[in-house]
Image (tube, rainbow, N blue to C red; front, side, top):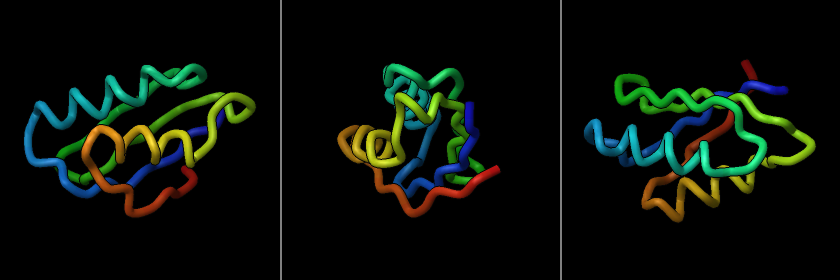
Length: 73
């Protein structure tokens, strides 16, 4: 398992947090997704053999938000 932080643009409310969290958790191999409106980021734990950064960014962008960057924790 790896844990990464994803900086996300476009979140404005609690609905955004729930939507992004559900979007990330729907990806097979993601075990945890904690989304913060305050920091405009998500902390995601996932199996890197099953999940790529592009899979996560694609899902977030499909949900209507922009990914600024990924960083390792």
